[in-house]
Image 1 (cartoon, rainbow, N blue to C red):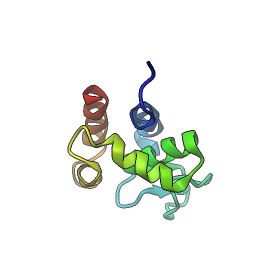
Image 2 (cartoon, rainbow, N blue to C red):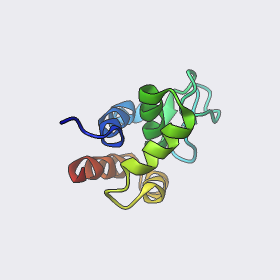
Image 3 (cartoon, helix red, strand yellow):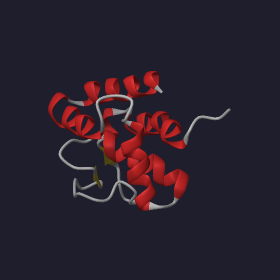
Image 4 (spheres, one colour):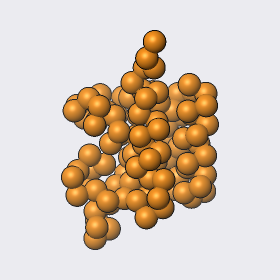
Length: 107
C-alpha cells in the first residue's frame, strides 16, 4: 500500500533544502538575487523548509491550493506547519531538517 501524498512529499522537500545553499529563512523562497518568490517559481533557488514542502507537493499535484494543503498535512504528525516555520527561521537549517526527519519518522 502506498503512502498518502502528504507523507510522500516530505523526503522530496528535505532533498530540496538538504544543501544549505538551497535553504533560506525569513521567506518561503528566494531567487538567485535573494528576492522573495513563490516556492513553486522556476526561479526559486533557496527555500525554507515549509516552502520546500509546498514545492514538493506542487511537483506532485500541479495545483497551488492543494500544494499548500498537503504541506500543512505533512507536518500534522509533528508540531505542525507553524512550528516548522518558526524552527526554520529561529533555530536554523539543521533544526529544520531535524523537524522534517521527525515528520518522516512519525508518518
